[in-house]
Amino acid sequence: MLTETFMPRVKAGGSRASTTEPDDTKIFEMQVRICKAFAHVSRLRILDTLGKGPRTVSDLQNELGVSAANVSQHLAILKSAGCISTRRDGKQIYCSLTIPEVKEACGLIRNVLRARVKNEQDLLI
Image 1: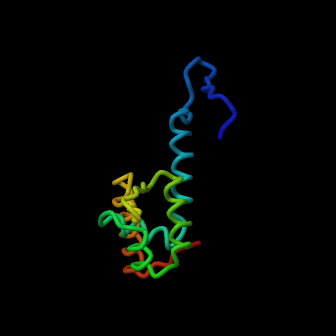
Image 2: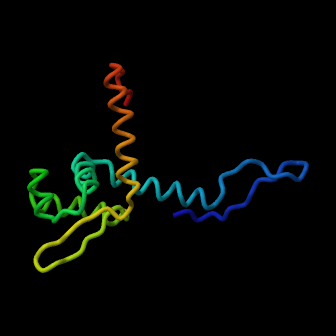
Image 3: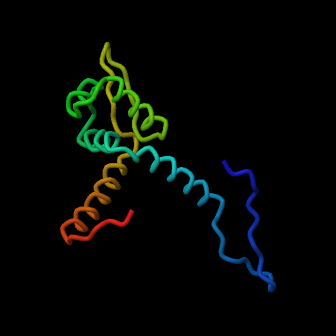
């Protein structure tokens, strides 16, 4: 959370210098939150699976081969970032993407990485 107020810089002649708008700062902060939520293989796999349609928690557990507790932890992180939503139907909890563009964004990143691998380029980390 930023505590400073946005004050545009003004050049000597009275014109405004190029700065980041306050709305852009909020967007960048939201992007960081989402990127942090994506920063785990299991969560990316969950997003990929949910990109194909809603799943129950037990479906995700079986498809990913992880424990119920592990799936639950990852779902909580994705839910707090606003990427997924859950709904209860009897004993089942259904999960789905709340931001459809997440599927497209994750796919785009994977396509870039596949192209790099195909071109035998090593990622610098």
